[in-house]
Amino acid sequence: MQYGLIKTGTFAVLHFGVAFLVGYLLTGSILVGGVIALVEPLCNTAVFYMHERIWDRFAKGRTAMAN
Image (cartoon, rainbow, N blue to C red; front, side, top):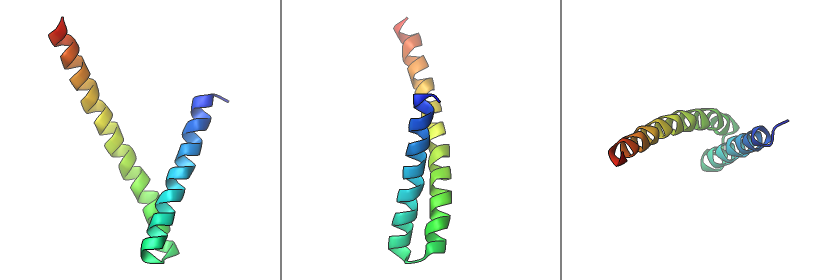
């Protein structure tokens, strides 16, 4: 198995775990903690994707201006 894939997988497990723990500690509800653990990482992933696209456009624009 590839190192990057293992690293990504362990990070995902940690992310879901932290999201669940924070949700549970704030609400005292396992259900709410579970929902937060599912929804928050999905939203975060979508935001990260858009963030990367914006930075890619920014980098391409700076490269074009430099040439």
